Length: 131
Image (cartoon, rainbow, N blue to C red; front, side, top):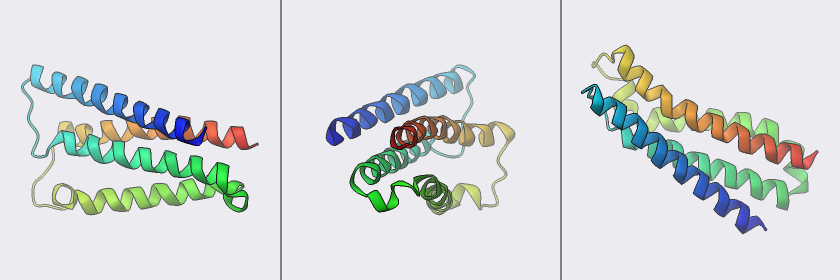
């Protein structure tokens, strides 16, 4: 049962990653827009961290009675950790002399919000199942 749910999360994350990146890059290519960063790396980071987060919360919810009631607070901490990791991995983009245009900034934020929405939907389902 646990493996099936985690596999489902993996498929969902992969689908969102592939569809989101394909649509995003197709739109950028159509309008001949280039960015000073690799968009696929942003999507890949978000997809992997979302999968790890959702799988971890599913495991905690099913295996640990002690932390089951604290999942909401753990999620807030995990989000802070995710922001720190994103900043560390992409510091060359975020902390550089290069000035990002509004379009570049928007392209950075789109995958973040797509995967944030996916995370929230999955985590809310896990939390509701526990109550």
